[in-house]
Image (cartoon, rainbow, N blue to C red; front, side, top):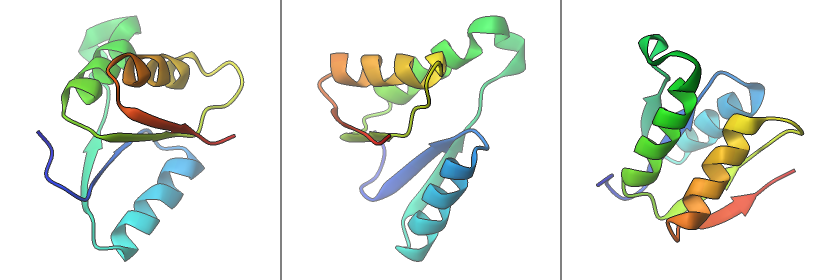
Length: 88
């Protein structure tokens, strides 16, 4: 289980960089998760499931149209009863 006030960020998008900057300003603990290339084409699905199982109590997602990885995470988070905010 993640400690309180932990921000988990994945990827290198501009949105993720902004989220990380805000978390740093708020003095949140930051845990960055990356996919593991050896997991192949479904590495993002494996990472998404691990994130859901990490004990998060809130998911804030910034999906773009056609971004199946982010939409998969949103679906998994909602399925796990994690409060989910989708920002477009």
